Length: 416
Image 1: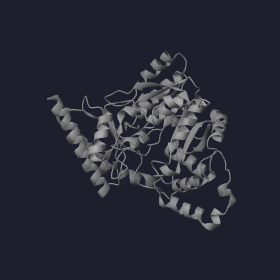
Image 2: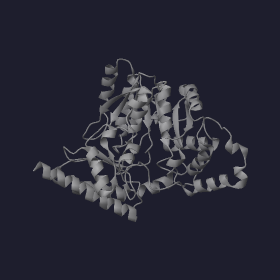
Image 3: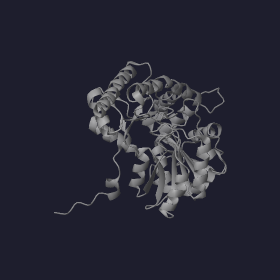
Image 4: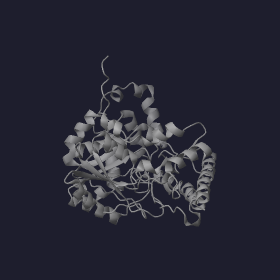
């Protein structure tokens, strides 16, 4: 009998898909699902109208809707994206190109393929977005992981030079995610500039994941590093329609990158998806083109209104943390100012995997372990996936309070 061919060693060695692993172990009917990173809302009405129009008998019969399209993207969507980048992110289009992708994860993989080769290293700060590291491992790229400052969950520019020296010329890129996933940390503009300057000084590309650009709280502000002209030739900026516009299932993202990468980016695009689904791009163009009198790019006022609705539930989650885990000064968490998450420190000695299992099995609350993001002893709670004021939100918050309270009580009893 012939031997079966081997499975890819890099694929086998890569970390598990974090969300799917938690679902496999713990998901069941009736679960309060605070694990995935998505908001409670769906796309704006303009997107629904565009879908209805495209699905009408006459429009659906048009051959162009079903044919291969421009690999760069649907022309109306590209125009809307370019305006949004110019108006909202202050990114000058001169010397840069835009490509529509099937979500920001594809844009990230594409950025790695365009800037790195197998055996190269990429610097990523922990806690990190788990998919960033898994993607590197699948591509044969080595994640060079450095911990953030534990008191702020912000990266240290000095770590860049140290990593470059340690890698002996194989460090190719720096990944920055602001607002952070899972930390929620918003990197202040001054620090972000220092990080990019240090990366440029060491000849690195900067991959800037800005998926949560609109999700900022407590007076924090998002800054796109490609807005600085001196940085533009070094920065690839990743964005998505999944979070702000509630379009995760439609898989539309985009990447803005230096023009000298254009040939390789188009080569990769043509070899992977060819282009994002045309119908999804039509809907995304409508969402970005929604009427807006705020002076921002079209559609952004709609997003800001919805982000504002999260303030109460975000505050409620942090109040629960303060009233359970942090009583007596124990397990003080760093409160990030952005994204969709509370990244919560557990009491000393409590395993995050065990905490996730207990919350799921005893209290029907699903969260993610911090170990999947390179920082054990924490859990990631998504506060945006339940609609504020709903029965679902009330039930989830009550179950979370009971679960974290039980974990805190057991920890204190154990240490007496």
